[in-house]
Image 1 (cartoon, one colour):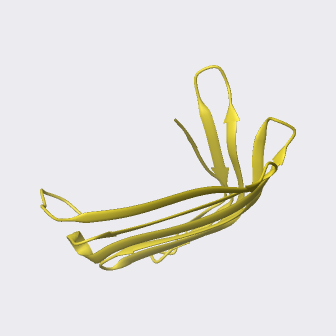
Image 2 (cartoon, rainbow, N blue to C red):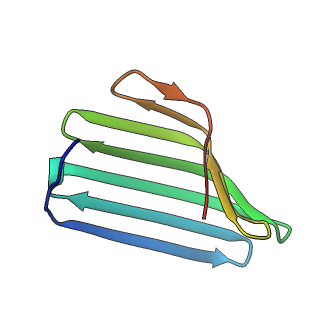
Amino acid sequence: MHGTSVGIRGTVNLWFEPTPSTMFATDASLTSIATGYSLRAAYGWRLEDWFYLGPEAQAFACDGYDQLRLGVHLTGLKTELWEWSAAGWAEDSDRRSSRICASAC
């Protein structure tokens, strides 16, 4: 997408810790621009007091494009300045695929 668009986007996020050693996270969003959406769900087990590790699935799309991600997430690994998250495999409608997706915030 190029240029400027005005629209509406709605998002819902849920983070739940059913037990002291497990987590469940999900989020979803819809936008009126290019009829886009995203969905994500992850479940994890806390390893020591370092991070959560478990399966994750994510899908997102807009007009003419979609992507599916499946993998194992590592969530909540903290270093001095950053908190890290990583997943595993992705494929999109343009037939591109990748192996690792990582982010820090």
